[in-house]
Length: 540
Image (tube, rainbow, N blue to C red; front, side, top):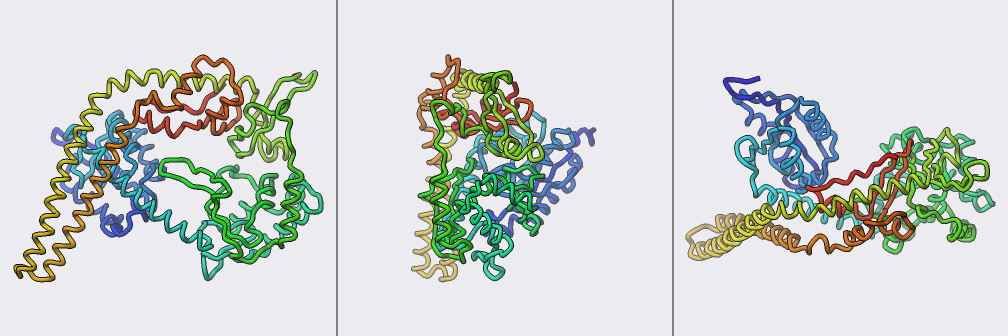
């Protein structure tokens, strides 16, 4: 369809706002973004507004946003062929993934991209070599905000203030102070019963069965019944039962003796959350009323140590022990060895929830050991082949990399010159004030403006210097994890050492489908962002 010789573009107006925008929230408000884009579209007959996609309260450091996903779905369906944003920071602050969309995805889908205040229009000019630099500035801003938020959170944690979204089962937030915990009497009664049963000799699985038989809902379901928007990612949406691991966590939770335990995990931008060692947790004693007395607590901890089973590692340890999780309920898989007449000696793995609680709570998820090993070996070989092809691709992109570096150096020279100019202006405005050529009010205004500009230019230079340092990284083939992968090229069988060295977690689904999360998955994604995207899900 055309209008007077012009192609028609079906426009997706994308708008994003989050608390990360800080003091700039007014200029970046939803209404202001809408007005700016509406003014831009005014009198442009070739644009037809299809829909407005608004993500209100979502960070720009990732693309896991509902409206953004809906927009991509409409692009895939062929409904949208033009995306318009106020500026690049509204689209995203992660320069790697933003670059993927602008350089690869949108061109492949023949989608026109317009960023109004950045003067970017993919239909009018070639790709702007400065665009990655602008994206880096956006990400650096997000990093600065993230550091400030983390520092503030850590300060509160060390002061014994509760900063979590949901209190531990047995407690609730104080109605007068959200950073204080008070006892939830109903749930606290269940917690005391769990400790009493354990001290009296009941095992953890037996305690879970008793609570399920008595119709007591598990902690996550209890929070939902109390109106909390709680979601446990390791649990099926229909799950409402107590398990061995839930009871185990409660018995080991120091919160129940009145100590505030926080800071168990840490997370960097674009990285998975990482569980810290216990000595790195933030624990503050006597911050709230205890549910369990110290005598009961000490008896429980002593019993937990005494009942810990020491497995025969030589005979019983699977090479995958500790790495296999059910892809649906999140529980560990257990090993079963076939008996004479029933798969003699053949090793299979089954969902732990199914084994302990039956089919009403989860399905078997059977996975033969030999099939699992073959899937992982083939996936490793696929990654190794991709790494071996990397050198050729690096050579092909060397000229582009050189151009980016030259552009970066030219921008650094320009910024240095601009910074020196601002410093001179700041000095001259003081001299004008001293000679009474301008008033004090004018001097203060000018000086503040120059100081702000000086600060901005300094941050931009620091960001470019950081990028230059990143470009000075050693040759990719010298990285230890790549060297080790290449050494596995001829490996025919997996062993425990290889699994520990290479794999973080294996999630098993029905029909022999698995998802492998490698220890080097983050590095692989960053390094091969424009070359190779690992296919982590494999079938038999």
